[in-house]
Length: 418
Image 1 (cartoon, rainbow, N blue to C red):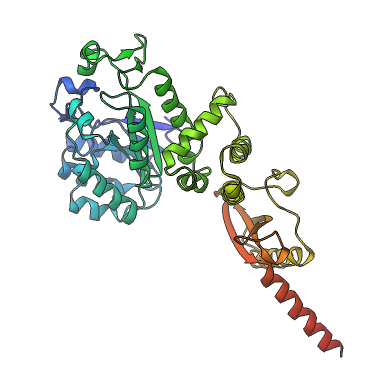
Image 2 (cartoon, rainbow, N blue to C red):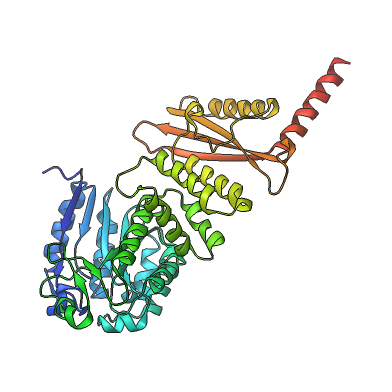
């Protein structure tokens, strides 16, 4: 079996100690674990065979904090190159475990953490016993002190939650600044307590798999579809590390990131963009169009420049194919500065097997009238080596400084001639 490609799904336990009413595990709160000897033997085989990605599908991997810490330590000791995905209860992480997780290298662990809702009444109605305050405290610790990738979950269509409250929940979670936010519409699985209560609670759902809720007394079909659209937009932007600065900046333009995402979803819907996949370049081009029609004119320039930086820091921009929203017409002094910087870096990389490519564009320095002295140059270096991920380095300088350097150089030349 070739373990170096794709996912290996592995289960160390079955069942869950919690009784969330949307989950089949609510029917039985007993947790059954394989023996530690069996688990460690299996994991060792997977790790020694350099399995690329291992997804542990336990409902709550750290239901027993002592057991979880032992396995975290075992994996860290024996892992060479595998990426491990865990579904955990963040509120269950104790201080000993949190402090241990500080030493986990980047790209080794990913934690999926179910927030589900930030409304206490909704959490109570679905019998979810996970103290939100402790969960958030531990999430903040993980984001600040560890290199673990955090994937947080929200569920739309739960009892008692309106569209506006859903947007507030998105803002609440995004204020934590996770690497990934997944929003799913609640599914009424056969036999799950919430499905048995569907008629009583007024929940309408598709009787065919995956049994997705289509309307509730608090959110009609259109509202739930809008949430699904927002989820899709998060997937192609924030969750894909694409346009993150721009998405974060929506808070400035709309008063909240979620309301900005709702406006973006409306634009995407009106343009028919949710119906088919888009390339990365097409996504950025549509975001640039959104700026022109949905953001106040006085803020459009700053928003566009944020978008430009996001794009140039996510993939190599080829000058001849650069989107029209980039300013690429550099003056002679700017071109000379770029050439000098490129030549200097190229010289330093000789013999290292690194390929250097670059792209330069100019941006405004705050409020100005577009005068050349009030510009700044952003120079992006794209460095690639055999078998290595592309590295992007950005250098920034104000054009006024470039002109001063150029003038000083000219003066030195004149003095030398005299």
